[in-house]
Image (cartoon, rainbow, N blue to C red; front, top):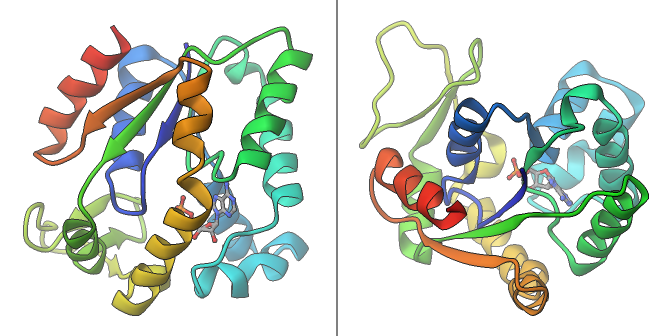
Length: 206
Ligand code: AMP
């Protein structure tokens, strides 16, 4: 299955992508994770994108499209994938269509995880990541175990979260209608426990 997960920052997209990876045996392709890895490796690409990411802006379409193109060439993505955080613009969505057409493949489903803005801000500002394991916690709803080495992503600070949500609304709002026209879009209520949302996601996938 080839799936795209849409949803604003802190909507739980990443968590649901992980669930789908396990249940459907397909890799998760997260442009955010790839860019963060580039940033922490200190590569040329990483240095190029660091400042943009820290202020919550969007990295250029060219860069993320190239990353996805390279990732789709890896063997594990041949039979399916769940894309998390890509596409974010209509230009990226069109490029994805082309990348897949070139591989004689197409998307099966686009799920949009929907959560109110006030809840998103609370989720992001209380979100923490264990820097050793990459595991995500929430200080209120999913507290970390003792000994976790927690970091608060720079782009999860309250002011930046507001900017990322504005950016999401501005650029990504057109993606819903784009995929709706293609008959691929399914909306999923993202409010509830991660397990509840996973149930809805699986139901939406049929
Ligand atoms: P995420 O983990 O998906 O929230 O991504 C973290 C940051 O990486 C975003 O705030 C952007 O700066 C950048 N990024 C990730 N995916 C994309 C994309 N598809 N297009 C542009 N920028 C992206």
